[in-house]
Length: 544
Image (cartoon, rainbow, N blue to C red):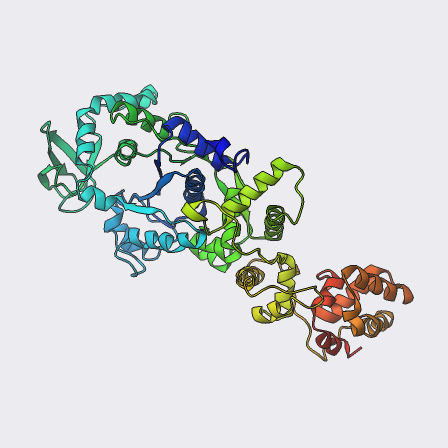
């Protein structure tokens, strides 16, 4: 139990949930945690919140020595109801409306079906953030008649099911007339526009198709087109897979929503206690995730996120926020602040910065452990094997722009003016962050953040006193730039130049930025000068 683990008292919601699962489901050796979605379109970042929330709870359980089966269900036997706005070949896709999603062709021509295309997109990227569930494909499972017993049980208890569903409906929305807990995809035209005619009280179902007129009797033990309605299918699978934990969005957790009804169906019809759960909230997007967004219906997915944030930062966004809290993922200048927050958590976890108290230290260290892609033995959250080299995102952006986008050149400057550069083991982490920084500069950063150093011979149009001050800056500061031990001593020398020329600091700064990058503002000047190659600086300023 919690008191027997060194993660006790972390206050992290994943640990709290793990303890609740053990408490409510019994202290078993093994547990099943579930997640899933219908691949009806791009799996966006809001959907990803469920996946990573489950992963974090799985890691917390494994940290307690538990065996955990982490299943992710693709509900690819659901009906294709509408064509999302960001899909190519919309006219052709519309001819497949009311088909099972797994039978809709891939409009990109890459995979075996529309559903499989979206599944592959997710399955290929999840390992990058350390998530590797066991994928279950519901079309395959239904067509293999794995759920024949569960379907028959629903038919045997259809009055009970009807009463459960009506319990949460007002009089105007209660089920009227004959009702069946199943739907059938027509064996002739593949659409679900069918009606049930009879059930023989055993395995036989008679149906007819309203779309093409086809009639048929099928045996549930071999039928390929019979499936349960959503509010019965979900709890049936809880019992079939023996699910102990599954989160759900706030829409499912609304009063009288699908989780409420599923809980009763699971217990009263299938004899299984509903899984432990929690509600996760919506995610907002701030800023533009890239040029591609407008053509994609402004759907932001995990690959979009990984272009700006490293895998550890992606995990940190979710590990550091309680699931029932709505939050915003930023692509604007707030990206810098998010990287700074992560770096502070990292310093606290490694003991390089003191936390306010022991409780804060435990929580920050736990968030950091959950943020790592790689797990320790047994899938437990763990510190990385190599302490990362801390390079602030803002400074990295400056270095990359100074290097004209050349990441190798930017990384090679890290030891300039510093006590020591990164070790070979630390360079891959720096490179991963640098790739995100370059993308963010090119695709997301506001124009005022971007800059490009002038070429030698280019000259800013500066008044005489300011040009004179730039000459002094070149001859008195840049010429001995390596002698400054830190940014503070360099800044003092810059202010000394301004004072000698009767200028205020702001005026000299503006003149310096105009001389260097052709703008009125730029990075902090002392650090900026110390980050640029001395010979390059002198060549730019030589025209003054």
